[in-house]
Length: 220
Image 1 (cartoon, rainbow, N blue to C red):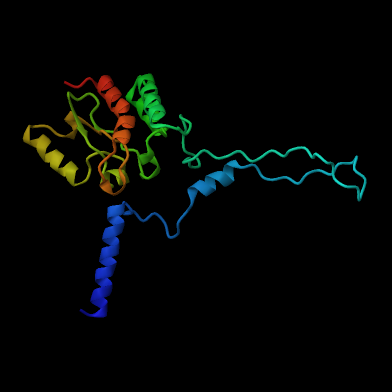
Image 2: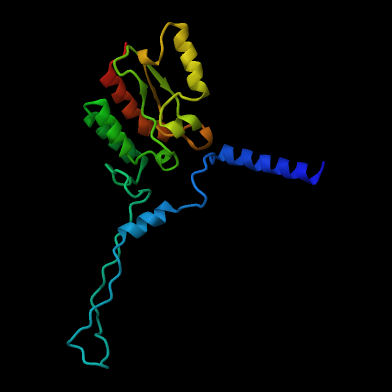
């Protein structure tokens, strides 16, 4: 095997490893640490302390100087301009409880989508590109619930638009239906990295929003 063939095989192996790890999107020429950017935007600019007129020039500083205020710590996982309806959570139980409260407070699908967009209790949100809420007709009698978004769904922000979506279209066509006659969503609203199997906690934190969708749509 020539050196060029070996280089090609190594490059293909590296690409395969990246895809399996979930790094399958090129979004810029250089990496951008948005957590650091968020911290820089939220932290107040440091100001020099004003001189104390009561202290004569050359005199020693006071024994107990007043404490200075420390910069406000940024919210973990927050991005500039992102809506926040929920503070960072400290436990899975809190995330699931907050998901139930947010889901039940939504009276329409638009309110439910807005609540879900501001929900920070599912860690998949931090690694996904887009929220995949639903597609199809909310007035439909048939509701389809898949597992989780894939790469195509994550890119477009809609469920079932990739290869699985084409298969679903053929399945619906086989019974005389199309996407305009079905409401389509997923059990998870963000793509798991590398299309891995969702964890029980990830499912539990999204389930209240799926159940509320069913309550609002009332499919047959």
